[in-house]
Amino acid sequence: MTFDDRNDSTPAGAPVITVSALNQAVARLLERSFPLTWISGEISNFTRAASGHWYFTLKDSGAQVRAVMFRGRAQYADFIPREGDKVEVRALVTLYGARGDYQINVEAIRRAGVGSLFEAFQRLKEKLDAAGLFHPDRKRALPIFPRAVGIVTSPQAAALRDVLTALKRRAPHVQVILYPTPVQGQMAGQKIAEAIDTASLRGECDVLIVCRGGGSIEDLWSFNDEEVAYAVANCRMPVISGVGHETDFTICDFAADLRAATPTAAAELAVTPRMDWIGSLRADVVDIRRAMRRALNDAEQTLDGYTRRLLNPTAQIDQQRHKLRALATAMTHANRAPLSQARHQLDRLGGRLGARKPDVTAARSVLAGLQHRAAISIGTRLGQQRDALGALAAQLEMLNPQRTLERGYAIVTNHQGEIVRTPDQLHADTTLDLKLAEGSAQVGINKVQPGKAGSDPAGVRPL
Image: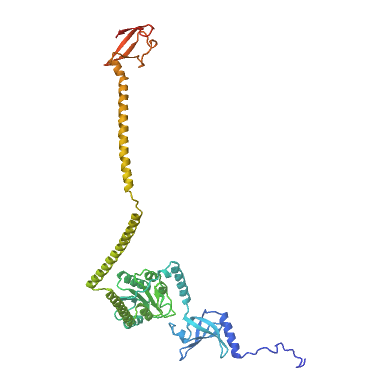
């Protein structure tokens, strides 16, 4: 095959990349493929550059890898590695593009064997979290104006000096109470818990700081104690945990009401700077003065308005008197006008009535003659009626049964009260009632004999 007939598999228009682009692409690929992970090995070729970065090789019996720990992370390490130290690093796999060397970027470093402590830390953390010690709802707010700040730490600890310096600088008026306790060594966890319980029992401070400086996980292990966690959770006042550096986390941090990155940060969180409060108070004074001045101005304006509306009592009485006179005049006119109008109307109606009133003099003369004639007629008529009544009375007197009885007659009635007129109404052995002119009598009948008129038809015997 000749050169001209050679088959080139690369397309004619394929892009060509630089070495730098290649190394960057490989670095991104490694970083995406290998997340942060813990790697154990032995320190070799350790170098501490003037910039503060650490360069070393991490190796084991079969392989090695270059490692770099930049100053921002190295400053939080609790020890400086030496040749041959067994360590565990938390690193990101990447590529150094300038040389094309594969390496790891170390984020954290610890002595070998710390892994078992970390596992114990995780188990205790999960246990206390399940018990509710880390729940956000039980976290308490820090007091705004603490009068006293308690500190649980060792009197010889550098952290105590940092906290005292920060408190003196920010709030020299705040009282500081130290509850001394060992922060490292045997039984340190129990003694830390006892110091916290003592502070809670005494109730001398408004906020409590539990702190110590940085160190290895073994140095900080006293603050991963279960007794310490329960003492912090049960403390009467809010607790700020300032243990280690920013990258250090302990069980005390999770149980506390607030975690600070360092002991100095804990002191800064516990109190507000005095000058800030003075400035805030001065601003409040200015606001209050402005509000008072505004309120006084408003009150003065209101008072001026009331003053303009307020009249002198004499002037007010005169004003009311004039008003009363005006009302009286209006009332007089109001009453007088209807009366005048009614009077005029009455006069007009009287005139009309007089014009239409008839002359009754002749009628009165005729009425008097008629009354005289009626009186004469009534007198004549009454005399005639009186005479007729006397004749009728005389006739009635003549027909009065009593007069007949006085002439010797009697009225005979049977026991049923019927007047007896014929013999048929009489029966033997019966009684009759006789009404006489004066009184009455009862007689008995022996027998009845019919006969002619004027004969005695019955035998009468007295009873």
